[in-house]
Length: 104
Image (tube, rainbow, N blue to C red; front, side):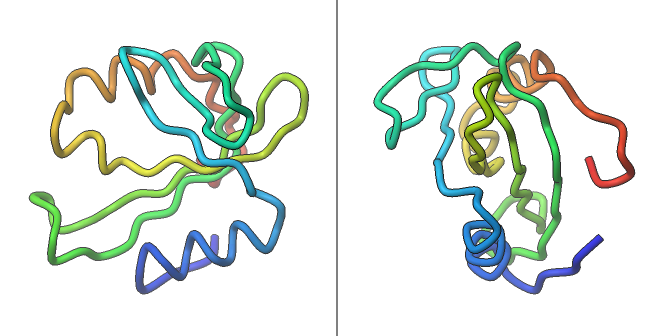
């Protein structure tokens, strides 16, 4: 697994590898601004999960996740929403399929 020092570094590297869409949680569902649509969390497969140190988060770390949609679109999501609504974030996140490949 690749090690990153900052969230920006992780996001830039993942975008360079094709994770070009941005997924966020809105109203208990996942929304993609680039695709202009809501996506059911059950239609996302977690491919990658990276943790980076953060002095601005309550936990001292931030996470960035690499997902694939059912129609093979790649995108990223961060756990920043969890800072505001941890229960809501993890409620949605748990619905995503988590591939067991050693990275996720």
